[in-house]
Length: 496
Image (cartoon, rainbow, N blue to C red):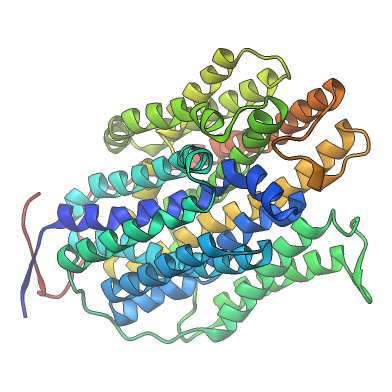
């Protein structure tokens, strides 16, 4: 049966849900200090509100990409959207920090069901020559969402309460479901085997690695329980991830992560880069939130507005940078973007003193927007450009997984770095005592500002390494050369 599909309306329908789930990767950042005070929690536990979401988002992505290939991407997307929306409601109703973390994990799994389907549907409904612009728009939406998250989180937290950073997803989720149901085509699935050994190795390995890194400071990097040490947990996680890669190499059936995808240099470079982008973006908003709200005494709305320039500049420049990348290739566009981003984060770190003028702190935010405008669109477009249609689900699953793994590792590293720098600069530091309304001495306030500025260097380093990695991009083949096979006669495309 032939169905008529309008690719651009289908893309914008998907982008509503995609925007929502990526906003939730960073929306909690500005609310973290308030959540910490509400539940009388410590810093490491509060960061688990973000890490639980990211971890539950990252671990299943390799599988959920294949689920879309098998059962049809639209069906899997809609199931994930329903799960995400219901979990958002549960987050807002949570009565304890433990309930909130558990609901965030369910929310992350819903996001994992959705994300690979958006990328795979784009690859299947757009003709090759239109796919670059579509992927650029998809990537730009993703980049803008991660920047809008802290701003929206601050406004909602300050006006109606932190619970509404989750409640707001309910009406948006309903709208996203209706428009996706009407505008996204039903695409045929393909039979797949599921690599359960690969699922177990990757999932357990990533969990142990993140858990060990993030909880290490709590156990003073020593014994956790019985004979189990922090370093034992971390090393076990790394070993399991190495075994996962080896298993993908020797599995002759249908591996979870086809290593043949990495024969394409641009796919490999884009994946390495998006991992580091995940680290850099995730490690940015939380130190800024604690600096503006605790050290400088701003309310969440004003703290969020201090980040507005990067979202505005990125949103304005994003489409133009995407077209430039298509014209001249991704190498130098992304190189310039990451150099600018690294400089912006270094500028932030150097400026974040206890008495810095607020107008001065708007300047690195705007500069960071320039850099971010050249990250997400060109990377997404280049990563998938040479992939054949039959590997669309697997490729998008790998790319999305890599991005989220970077975010998970970035969140874990940030928890360690913030605890270490706070302990170094605040005498008698107690994690649970640092929240809005804390009565800090002038010396402790200055120490907090210094600790947060030093924590931002994680983002600066991640972006600087990105600039080195993207130099290895090669200019992609023109779109449609060679043409990739499309859905077997089941879709007739219309124009925009």
